[in-house]
Image 1 (cartoon, rainbow, N blue to C red):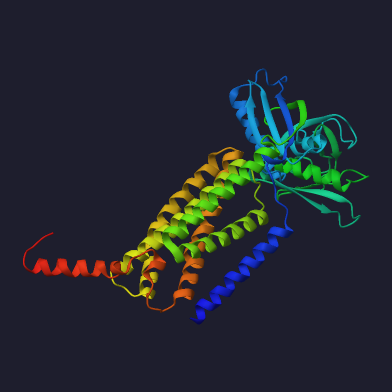
Image 2 (cartoon, one colour):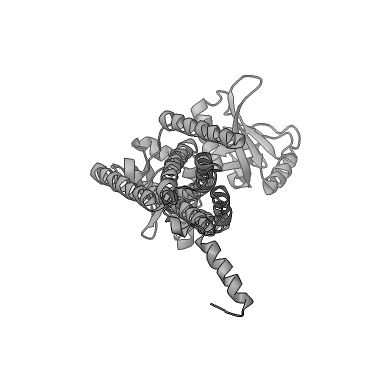
Amino acid sequence: MKNRIIMFWAIVAIVITSIVLIFTKPTKLGLDLVGGSRLVLEAQTTSSIAKITPDMMDSLLFAIENRVNKLGVAETVVQRSGENRLVVEIPDVSDLEQAKAFIGDTAELEFKAPMPSANDMYTENWISTGLTGKDLSKASLSTNSSNGQWVVDLEFNAEGTRKFAKLTRALVGKPMAIFFNGEMQSAPVIREPILEGRAQISGGDSGFQYEEAKKMVDLLNAGALPVPAKIVEENTVGPTLGADSIAKSKVAGIIGLGLVMLFMIGYYRLPGLIADVALCIYGVILFAIFKTIPVTMTLAGIAGFILSIGMAVDANILIFERTKEELRAGRTLFTAINAGFDRAFTSIFDSNMTTIITCVILYCLGTSIVKGFALTLALGVVTSMFTAITVTKNFMLLIFGTKTLTHPELFGLRKNEIGQGYQVTESKKENAKFGIID
């Protein structure tokens, strides 16, 4: 009994914490609910790229999605439009300049060496070395210990480390220029070979401003575009669903949830009421999780949330049906409740794990909208397992404890049903002694 009381207060603490998070953290909404920016990018041909192929566009789409997601913009929709265009929709960003900054310019990082006849570090006669931003593992922001200026630290991958070591060996005593998007950032003289695969961009004598260095780090970590892309169309968009549609969706959701809760009370009586309380706790906890991560709520994400509510109700139905079977078999109330939860757990776990595996596949292979649906559904399923097994069970045992079932109608049963299963089983055993098979 003491453990159940401790668990009860732990649940109360979780609910209070969740309510605080809900009221203190903002809700991130998707483009269909809150509007945002819409940009159209067009892939450009160059001297080395004579024609834009479907494979190039697929690579560009992947790179743009990866870039925007790494810059912290969730639920961005990136999709093909025609042979050489991409449509990018960014939620809750009405400033077009900010939206373009999220996508970013090209992030072309190059390391160049002076011409054989030139040793002057300020010369413009630089040649490519083959070491580029594609050889980076990551970029980070820090300050120079000597002058306090912002610098960009570079860390190369295995291939980049090999290239950089070979390059610095060959350039000992000579300058090496670092170009970003065609502009030279610095040209330090190599004093000795650098073998550990690290470099630093200082921004020259004047150094970097914080915003400039931060943008460079973000673009380098997001990766370079496989083909040049130009923004050919830009505009802000309002929420596609509209305020009226959102209001109607809320009403529909409240009505649907209300009907489900009434059904649970009408069919399962007091356990159904307990399940409804657990369902409310489930909703509070899950919404707090959404705000904490944070999860961007779109129509697809809300659909995943609603579907997970159905699965939470389904878990309670399995538990209560098992409990009723145990009561029909003549078990005591306490034993029937424990047995009902224990025997239903396998079915609940199997069905939920199947759903979670599907969600993982959808999240790994799906588009941004599909990922939002998969994430909210998976979080909902995990949370529903906690509330169904922990919250509902704890409340059932606290209320009923070791009491005798004197009012079976509270469980939706008639008095003559209690122990009926036990009597039938004993009758079958008796008949079996005489070779009678039902």
